Image (cartoon, rainbow, N blue to C red):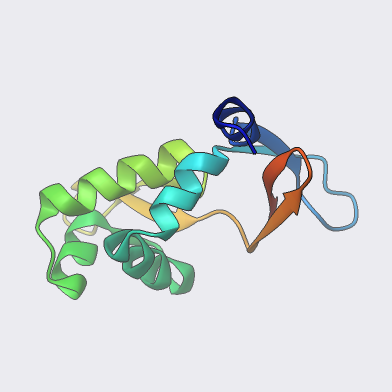
Length: 121
């Protein structure tokens, strides 16, 4: 595959949700997702977020990472379409963002014209 073919193969792609009656379309950035999955920090964060929605502070504490590192990965994961954030109010009235994984599965597929990533919700 030539360099121009490689660049074309990793363009942002839309994939549909799977399941009966599902009409939502989720857009994922294939190149960014592949890059993030090769990042130890991002994978550790995804492992925790797959089980429960967490704040950046909680991720930082549980993974013993700096908040700057956590926020950089969270921003990339959210931009790539793998996680989403929501605002929650704690008992003391403070507003805080929580992050959660929005995909159930990812399937990497190799084609003659490039690589694609199928995402299911």
